[in-house]
Length: 508
Image (cartoon, rainbow, N blue to C red):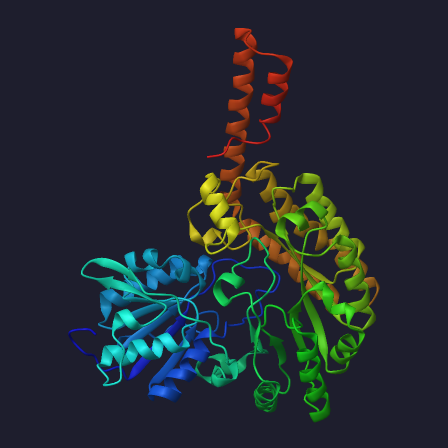
């Protein structure tokens, strides 16, 4: 227990603004971690909480200066902004700074080095309550070393306490209190979550590391009550089920949808799921009848070898069939693709774009494979020395930060980061939809096209650096080939190998 106790009555929670943007960036959607923590702190400790989601509203620094504790949640791409907030808070206030979220869960030492007082790793609903009780010197408080999932400094050394077990009964938690988010009352999209965890094992994903490989579900009536409450307040909003896989347990999902239908709670809604959803006809019918607008599918690639490398447990044929069935039920498909696996080359990326257009997918995000801390991909690439960018703001799925195996980084950036989006959201595609009187689809394509133009403008220097690196490495390899030829110490096989390496730079 700390030598000096501290009264904590006012807490400010902050989610920094993401540095990048994509075709859905116009829809500002906070993660539910902070609204849930806010609800817990109010309910269990009677603490006054304000939340600043920087996509919605600017931080009120007067409120921060009056706070006893400031909590900052960060993903990898927002980590630099989060550390900047830590530096300012520590310089201007006496508030205790606590950080949480996926990035610092896996890199707590980095966050402590940047000035945070405590790191809450993993699910923080219990850890934050125990920490505040400890800091206040409550009679029933645990000591710092007894708080699972906590990292901090003690006598100059970093201490990482044991991992905290995942919460088994999600319905025991209060509903996330969205009203604590300053400026959120005007939002057009309402987030809600029914589960945590994922039994799948996609190589580039951190969900299983963060929430486990076993699904945990809220009780149907608990979800329904929250949904009914939000629907009464925001009848015109689109609801987004934040689950990593909303249909992970089809029977559980059908039970919720049946109850929504029975009670007439049928807002327009969207959700993330997998292609297997179409195997259950009753589930698809219930989705259509309860107001599903869009399904966000993790499709990843049209390259069978890439799907295997990612461990997606799906085929290209599965994807085609899923899109067809979903459209039959008058639901649109948002396809999320991840390009740049060790099995990808220029042609496989172009075929994935052609596939997306050919199958009639309504909207897409072509993301670049990103080695996010906590993922197996990150561990592999660190071990192999393939990551050459260490600016976390570039770990957004829009920048190449590693050396691919079958192409140069610049080639991947051009094909996946620019050309793929340009081809799907082309002006010709916009006009085609307009001629079919599909005005909403046309508007989305136009927005996608404009977003790419904006991205290129803001990232021209980054792309230029990759291009210069690419040209320099090609010139170096060509010179090596010439030197070998002039020395006579080369064979035809050597020249062929060196020639191919002008496209594939050596690993760092």
